[in-house]
Image (cartoon, rainbow, N blue to C red; front, side, top):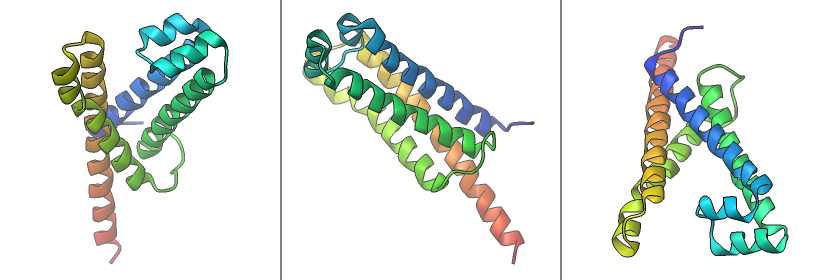
Length: 150
């Protein structure tokens, strides 16, 4: 199977999202200190310390969202079958990742420089670009297919 540059970027975005999902699941195993290291909200860290369900359910939910993002990238590159609302999902995923990447600017202005937040922002902005470039390729290919079918 031969992949275009755009498809390779989508696959890279899927890999990063999957790794982040696995990290969230590992936080459940690692306990409160791992949630602290991951900069989880205070309520999540408290939940992990107290052994309540909020921390593990939250981590599972976030991981499921990230794995879903990966599945859509795999679908767009034809590694797996076509998922419903593929174009819409790629655009939404791209937008959310780009916003997550840009939101660090007001955060850094308000709270000061935080290397973890800065790196996370760069990574998610990059993932957003990967999904955006992949979505553009999908949209262009669909336009070409539609023009040939007339």
